[in-house]
Length: 318
Image (cartoon, rainbow, N blue to C red):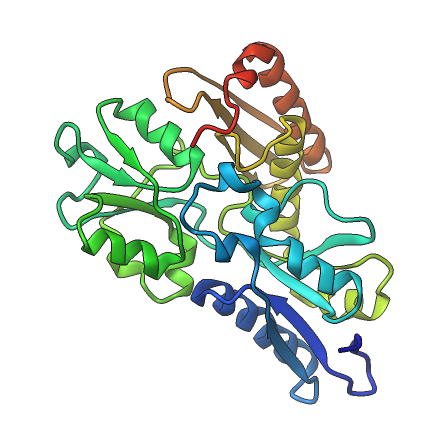
């Protein structure tokens, strides 16, 4: 298949995405917004692309390669022109992108919180001692153990529906999912409760859909411009700079959330040991123009405060 970049002459815009229900919901949201912004004459198609992260679900992400597991095959097609843009969950995106590609658009952020899912308890505190929680996220694992070191954490991989099925089968008594994903799937009612952002900060980028495109594709830049949310883009610049300063990947328990308040940006970042016994955090504020600098400086400060031995212990632990 050859690439068919969209333009005013009516060629098709091809969106590349993973095939999970949530990924498709996100791709359809981008498609619908493009059509709303430019009219029904804009032809937009969605190409489903299988990624390594989708195919391998019997091992933790940290054991099979990290964040790029959900993007590599899609980015190959974007680079060679078989698709025009790629739609991702921002929290899945590595801080280093393939040469020639960029994150050119961020949709307005949905709820960044983590949701607590259980039929046996309404919140984390109500779970009995030694309860089993399923999650594939190193951040969630570490933060859960920080609050409840008595918990038993088991590996939960797969899309939202797969994880909920495992919960129904009794593999665990509770799990955590992104509230944004539940909202986009029309499943917000399954959340027993929602974690407070101060106590349980999210993964950098959580809740935000991003669009990846080719650098220099001015036609796509023009089509995407009306979809870009400036506040979300600014917040994500801060969070991704924090992640980059820590060399963050799926092998690292890192949390970070930036909130826009008027002409300033407030950032809360945290790094943890995988067992949740050690953590370092920062809370800082800056003017909006310094968003990326704020995130980068916080990351460097925590790295220096924790010391390199802290990071060496992370390895590939799940």
